[in-house]
Amino acid sequence: AGDYYVYALDAVTGRKLWDLETEGRVNSSPTVANGIVYIGSGSKFCYALNALSGRLRLEFMSYSPVFSSPAVSGETVYFITASGYLYAVDGNARTWLWEHEIKPYWIQLWAFGLPVPTPPPQSGFLWGLKLGRTVHSSPIVTDDTLYIGSDNKLLAIDLQSQQKRWEFEAEGVISSSPALVDTTIYVGSEDGRLYAVDATTGEKLWDILTGDKITSSPAVADGTVYISSHDGNLYAIE
Image (tube, rainbow, N blue to C red; front, side):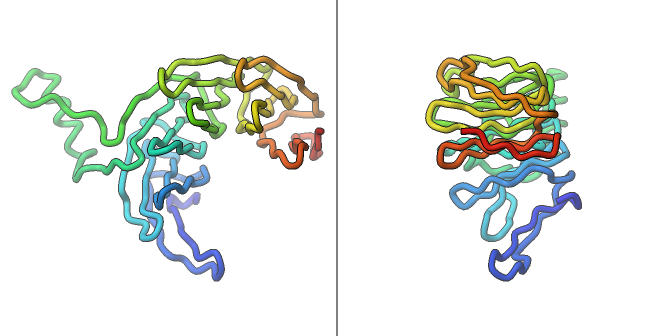
């Protein structure tokens, strides 16, 4: 929430089960997998919490706010920062005691050539990749590919090689989160268009122009794509 807290509520009664204070505003929706809650914040940290107790498992330093929701595939969690950086994090990792207090001094001593061991990587860190200048949409992940909007592009990232498979360029910023159905990705853009893109090749299949920019995310049901626009209309496209 905007008060820097993550809350767990009883779905039937609305009673608060637990809460946890973070370092910044929490604007993203949490992702829950394997009994763990993953969430980003407006500070420089992302979090992994025990879903039952709210106890902190991992406090991962992202160095930039995370406004999008994390994506989980297997035991790997993907956080994307507002500054356009993708982090792949071990979903089972734990922060060691005083890690973020001790490690900066450890790095300084090591950098000055003093006789200390090489600092270990941050707990949970697997790999990172710079995507673009800004990212506000949430990713979707298949077994081997991550799809995300960055700046005015829709990107497909190979999760094994950490290389870009393809990019599709829109005429406006993509802050909409993509939706994947079979082999087609649907995504909106601030150029006012809803795009359908081939998930394998990145080629545009079709687009439809609305009366204003699109920042919402498409929903697909029974072969119909639903999207709202800043022109005040909800569109249903077959």
